[in-house]
Length: 386
Ligand code: KIV
Ligand code: ZN
Image (tube, rainbow, N blue to C red):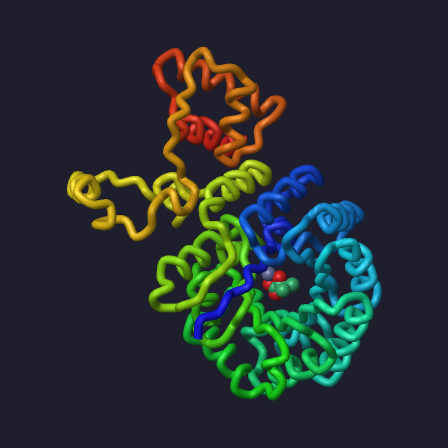
């Protein structure tokens, strides 16, 4: 049955937990607006208890964003939940996301709690959050390594307490597609009130399987996918938003599902996130990498000229690689360059703008016409060497 899959973006929360990525308030607001333009359904804006700066950012995003739910993360304790509720309360559609680990390893070594205590705390957390908003997400952290019987019990209790989304994280990226599909299938078959909540999936990429695992979850009944721009996140990152949305779109013949995402915004959003975090996008990264649509071999180029579908399963313009008539040259000024860069999804100001402008002038002296791809290359080089 065809469904609309909810896209929950956690670039500003899990993504910001990437080693080396941190964003200031203005940058977070810019990314949040780009996510709205991309038409994600939910923006996880941060973890409000983590720091005053995180609280301020979640609150500012909740106040400014229109057109997506704004979510704040909280552990299952009163202080976290109250702080998250305060941060998101001015959003049009505020969501509180409470989480508590459930796997034996986390119960024994991290939480030192038994199973009954975990269920009691999960229920108390969801009930407290419910006092603030009707849009509640509950995550049993490390769900993919949790015993199936216990996971079913926790999920059932969280839904009874009022969770409207139950998110199943593969916190350490341990699952494989068959495993993850089975976890979701078990919940669908064994939790009696599962139809009262949306099942979500949150996959980490430690084995490079986050996108494949998320697709397997969708095949088995998940209705929400948690993901990040460029797949950034803890350690090896999270499920990449651009890959999962293009997989669902390109293979709609197989999955039959849709998302609201405007895929023509993928490349500009990817570039924006890369430039504000300083995390370079690898050249051969699927969908948004500079080589994603580049054809080098003669045989491929020949086929492409005869008919692009010989070697391309997606059109570059469908993901936001634009061919443009606007050519820049040695007479173009700094403002025009900043403007062009913005249209390409880059955020350039101050010293960074000056540095790229100097390099642009040198290039324009050698090359009569400077194209978008030249400008992107100049900026990428500077972002990666920053
Ligand atoms: O990876 C994880 O388990 C998380 C939770 C907070 C959902 O990020
Ligand atoms: Zn995570």
